[in-house]
Image 1 (cartoon, rainbow, N blue to C red):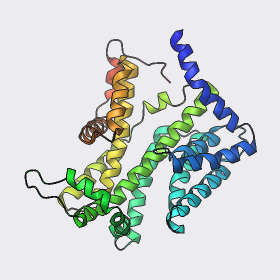
Image 2 (tube, rainbow, N blue to C red; image 1 turned 180 degrees about the horizontal axis):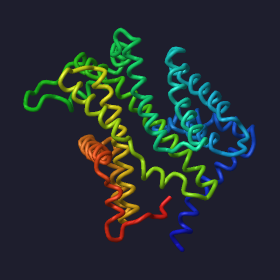
Image 3 (cartoon, one colour; image 1 turned 135 degrees about the horizontal axis):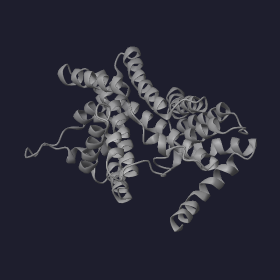
Image 4 (tube, helix red, strand yellow; image 1 turned 90 degrees about the vertical axis):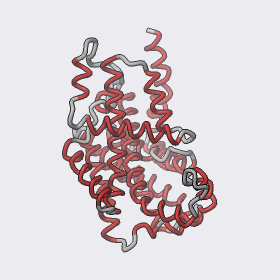
Amino acid sequence: MFAARAKARAVFPMHSLAEWLTASRARAFIGSGLLAFLALLVPFCTWLPGAFVVLLALRQGQPLADWVAAVVAGGTVAWGVVQAGAGPLPALLVSLALVLPPLLIGRLLRRGGSLNFGFQLATLAALVLLVVVYAVLADPPGIWRPMLEKLAAELDRVGVVMQNVGSGRRPQDSDLIQASAARMWGVVAWVVLLNTMVAVFVGAAVMGVLERVARLGPAFRELKAGRTLAVVAIVVTLAATVFHWSLAADAAFVFLGAFVLQGLSVLHSARAALGISGFWLVATYLMLFWPFWPYTTVFVQGGLAIFGFMDNWVPLRERFRARPGGGPSGEA
């Protein structure tokens, strides 16, 4: 009883805010712009406008069309990026990356598509983005060099950490810029995938709160890239390792991110089926995203990616449920 009351108190502010924002066309219109503005100001909150677009896409009788909210949010993001000193084209690309994928997946979910299918499509879209970049641009890494050169002071600090063990030599700024630029498109594609899926997760979760049903939890615990993408990941990794193909190396970042998300899904499934303490779940998220533990973060990412990849071949979730005491959980 006490756990249910605590959960209700935690959910109530989210429920109230979502109800307030979607109560009228004017509030939804203002909310689209406000959330986009907050996405530019608050670190790690770039998913906010996309989550609201997903919520409007899923909500029956929404006061504002999801595409209108996407246009308002995208325009606000583009304006903020231009004010920060970027050109019109980068501003347009950033705004599209933040609102267009969540809009498309939100509509897919509204028409009965599964979260798992949306995840697979988002992963494929990130890979297609890389293919287009390498097909259109003569020198894809060169796009990032001017920006990275402006960050040379910060890269000097990174260079101290990355110095050769026992050599006493620190890599030059030019070496760091070259290495960072070479993999920047892969990082961007992975960030777009992560931002899209977080927006979809939050939008679906809030919709579940409004409907008072567990919309996100059961679907997230079944998240799976599938064997086809797993095979492509193997081919891409081999191409990057053996032939040092830049496109393949960038695509490997996307697959790493996708399998990390799948690994988190496996972890949530294990907790729901086996009753594992939530402490380990919280600790995993802290180690995964805490910026002051870089080596721990790499280790946790690698472990989650391995479990996520294995889950495409070994029925881990079914084995969790088959163990004594295992079974479905009411966790939202």
